[in-house]
Length: 340
Ligand SMILES: Cc1cc2nc3c(=O)[nH]c(=O)nc-3n(C[C@H](O)[C@H](O)[C@H](O)COP(=O)(O)O)c2cc1C
Image 1 (cartoon, protein in one colour):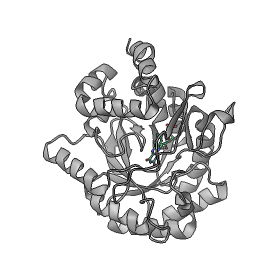
Image 2 (cartoon, protein in one colour):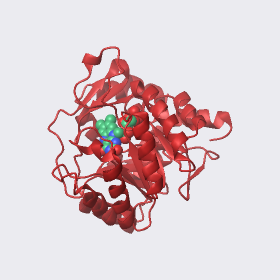
Image 3 (cartoon, rainbow, N blue to C red):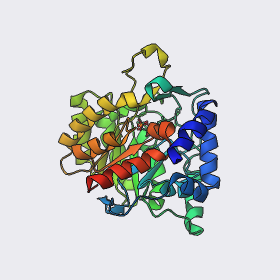
Image 4 (cartoon, rainbow, N blue to C red):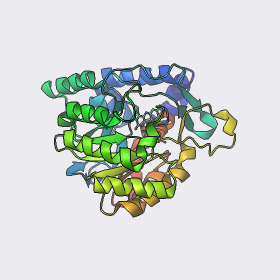
């Protein structure tokens, strides 16, 4: 019934809107009516799916990926939709508008999105004030909250580590863990920060500023295998607490590559590439936990990544196409399998 409501009514209505307008509509509803949406969606995960991650127990290994709630405007809603953890951001030190619209594009035939958002962010102070207010009002979620960190567009590559450290200093004390994002394709030069020298500097500066919070590294699927191995090795050497793989891809594994405008591709077609890079990251990560993300749009894919060795999974585009019913269906499959 709930899935029918989504497929027959809500999704067709939302898909008539411009993708970013639809995004703001859903986010606004999530911010205003978390309880109502939670009831409509079918709510929290069933007991028995809990996993341990970074010193916390997650009620489910399925998390909301970065980018959907960039400014943490709807934080109390996500656990009510069943997510076991949430990653807000990317947050930049100073507010910035991101790229001009349109900057999100749907490819329904492929169940994919292409985005070139370019880190629109309310900035670290604004996000911090919102998080502080939630804590003060007793509305802090019971699931872990990660904050994904980025740099401002006008900050040079040489000074990038200062931006990551600044956001870590402001938001670290309010978050459960932090994620260094050097893998978004839409900020010029950002992915070059995955190279050894800058990456080490950024991770060390972030850790030093992070108030003891675990710091994870989020990687791009477009890294060659050797570069990925090196980035994971640097993360381990710099004391990172885990790896997240992957961000969106600049490649076009599509039946019709011309259907995709410029930007990072996410959703169903990303899965094979994300999975291959995850396998590689898992082999390189040793005992560091690895969170799998990229194209998880059905229960079998979530189960597959957990079987592969991921400590947890995240999703974004699958949520756009399938609605909160996807999280519920993954939970059902996990429960049927008998262990998370
Ligand atoms: C519209 C959009 C915005 C995103 N913004 C961010 C972001 O700000 N920071 C980040 O680390 N990842 C961002 N992502 C990437 C997702 O977190 C995720 O890594 C990627 O989309 C692959 O997962 P999916 O196929 O489940 O969407 C964004 C993705 C989309 C579709």
